[in-house]
Length: 373
Image (cartoon, rainbow, N blue to C red):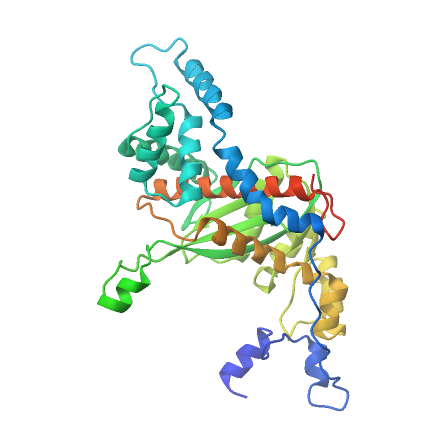
């Protein structure tokens, strides 16, 4: 067996399927059953189809309903200037966040969104920040996010750890995964036609703890690409719990299946942890009774059967969150300063969560019977 084939075997990569010890035991023998046909995905319900079709329309209407936003801007500006000595403030924080929300939705640059917002604000007799002032205020928001992370003492390469404010009374099932955010503004035509284009500025990693039923992100971390996935599980679960989010089950792929994570989630905090293992896993506890039970189940069943029995088939939904996020708001981060990047990512996640809450309110109950609103 070559080194590559051994590595693939231990990482559960056997063609298109993964392997448990039971699969390896019977592979190539008369006991090996033919692969069953692939399962048909569940058809979306009428409410889900309606939510998919009109949630973006409803959210766009909400964002640009200026008769709701302008009184908020005016009231916050009056409060900020009450008793202030010296030059009064011109722009409330809520206005800056609203502009960043519009920027996230439209993909406009700071210059373009500044021109758009000034035209809209002029209709209501209000000033709007210039693009340079908007960048400064966005950077202040990002510096605040990064400052909180530094105070918490997280490892090098972690730029921000944030628990979102979309706290719900509903007990959630959550999944964790990571994806890349592109720092290069891609232009494939320029590259193909003229062999010119933007420099490769690399990627940031977005680690997200998300609700697998509603698709909302409840906590996230922004890191460089040197930071692994497994250590961020405890960090994100911890900050989400401290913020007041309630959840009972955590889904994750095998990259998160460390003994430390099993002990932290199950033995210390009583969560249910659903994850996969390597093909050479032994059915041992390794310091956590729940880990031992899950490993014994993994070792006793073929992968396809184990996936159904364990509930691991629900894990893909946290990957679906990233797919929705990038389709809706794109994967490119255009800011160049660290503070500006963090502010842009924060505004995208705020916008994405508001959109998902709008969709949840339309759906009400998912086709799996989970009440979202």
